[in-house]
Length: 223
Image 1 (cartoon, rainbow, N blue to C red):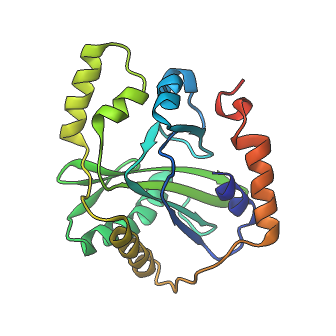
Image 2 (image 1 turned 180 degrees about the vertical axis):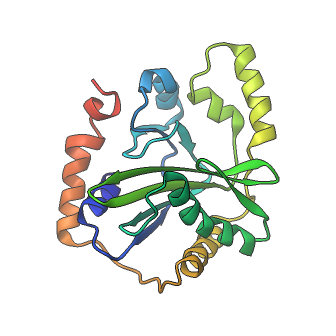
């Protein structure tokens, strides 16, 4: 998350696509959420799951068996829905290459046969856009609802049952999904993808942000 903020601050006219997974598994909450309302932090500690606040909006997410992307650009529609749609189109193309008939579901989801496969969130700063998105490879509903706060057991059971009807995993490997996602973005934006490395300045600034912001209770718990 610190790296994405640094890249957003440094962004020039060339968009950036970053693809990654999470180790250890992590719950991220949206920029505007309250950690104490959304996450059982003690359960996360017990299960070895990190907790973090994102720079982007949206809801709380357990990042476990998934592929995550960050897309940063200065060229995007000003309409929020249209900007989501343009970027999500790249993911939809990638999913079609894996044999799935995926569709954009406003405001910021992608679905397969009516079931959510991808959630997305944005922030815009100084004329640049950052979109985070997940592609679920598999879903552990019991783990998800043991760390995301649900007030009563009956409600928790119902949410697990409902989520099984509304959320789906690809059942594809990380590597093949990553390869397909690269091709999806390449095709959508008629782009040549060039692998890049971080500059020393970006590494230094990222470490500084980790220490001073993203690892602090002041940021993550908004104290």
